[in-house]
Length: 409
Image (cartoon, rainbow, N blue to C red):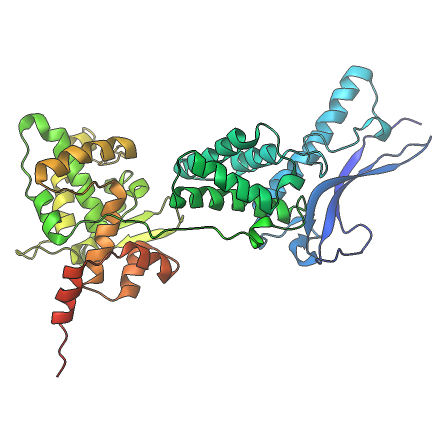
């Protein structure tokens, strides 16, 4: 009897028995109509789920699970790897039985032998992250490589490991808040390893991460005015454009990733004025900002609208027939803008060392003195007010100014 092709399928909770934490394993079943012996073999995927997170009809992780996209990517890849293994053997030897299959999933995860650093890198590569976020999380991976070399077993990830890693970072000259960021990144991938069943007890349950109150730079309205009134020579036009870009961040609260992509297609003009409508690079949600209603000057004109009008009719952004070109007004890198901002602030007589993100904090701080906090939260697109409060940096002068507005009688 001729051997048939091996059938590979995903099976959840094969023995209909849950672990103590209420989860069960997803396995791969390999079945073949083999007249001379065993017809099936089972392989662990290393992924554990609760029953409600498994879609039995479509044999995949339910979309409601926080790691559904990632897990389903893994599962599809595991099945494909088995298919490729079988095809390769058929091409070389003319036959493939389930006994010829490897002991573990090709390219899969083995609980006892898998390297946490490989797991970290693999998850990092699979995630759909902004490039700045990916770079930040890879920096932590590089620190772990310096700390322990190329291999960290899952069993090594305990309280002592976390404590020793923190001491290592201090010896490298990092400060508390810089170390806190590395803890945040490491914790993310340890949490994921716990969810996938490679670690039983999360060491961060017992470890308290230290954090100091950071000094967050922003500009007062007076300092912002110094930048607005700054004059440039013909040879300094490139600095003027960078100044305008930073002012746009101050006027709108846009993140650098969004402000640097802003083009004419994101600006909607109507009888109610101008709005910026664009999908946020970070949140993936539509941001709607009524710029005609904010930062109004003494002549009743919106500062962000006036700034954008300055570039609206620039031939650089239009085709020969006058239609829009889908290119940003300010196509800069963050590093370049931050470097040139040092020159610009020095020219304006502003002593603070600022970055592009200071524009977002400046926006939040000034708006907080003019509208209620929930409005600031919506404008910044924050899910929680706690995050908004971190952006509002009221100085002593601001507090006195607001107190004077109160009508006590």
